[in-house]
Image (cartoon, rainbow, N blue to C red; front, side, top):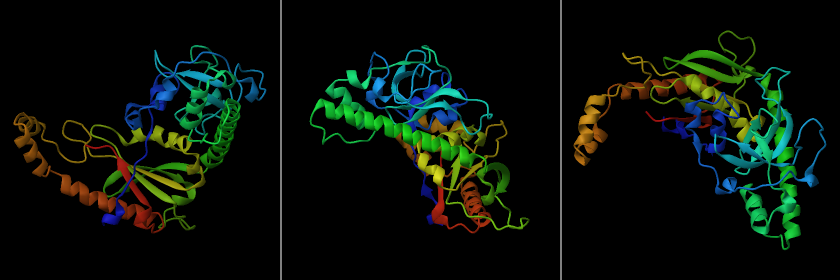
Length: 334
């Protein structure tokens, strides 16, 4: 059974979660917890305007593809990035809804700006005005190399190439997400005795017992467990962000399984029982108490482990007898 459990370890940047109140209001606190701090480069304070050398004309907006901008992610903080797409649209939005810009931050993550005003997005320093250190920092922050650039002019050319490549990648990812979004469905199913939200391409959700057509195996199944007191639906915004962070995911059939933990007598969701009084008493004893807590097996933990193993087995069986090595297990600790 050990081969069932492969670690799911995906990190994102704080900058995306920071937009929960200013740029992406649908983000929730549970999803925000999955993000790691942004790079120091995105904290540099620049002034200036967009780069005219990278402009793709689109008259109704102030900035064009390739423009260097700064995006507001909190009441006081701005981060630098590059416009990679105009009239951006999320697959889940109505067909007539778009926002002015999709921006790739210098940390590598993607965000969108809901408006074209200075209080949301403003011009940043242009490539032509960057110094050697700034050019090197920008190029390296995107994962590209500048070791073959001898002169400052070479660095400018490389930086512009990077910006245009970012725009191409973002546009390609948007097309793939748009194409794949029509095939993805969400259903509720029972696995291992847990009620689960399941999101996958329609052909991967066919029930072998009722469907005339065979179930198509997903490439990977991701089982995500929410934390103590949280809900499985808290992960739903994360499922929209993953293909933005890694556009390569659009090329694969992914099945997401989000189990819901049972609720305690107090109405708090938990995978097993926690004796908070005992926990507090043992913590007061210092190392001795902590050592005892480590040795104790919480009530309900063995049963939860057994049910989770059954969940994995049932998911694999219904997904066309998917092998265990194509299942990834992740989530938050209790």
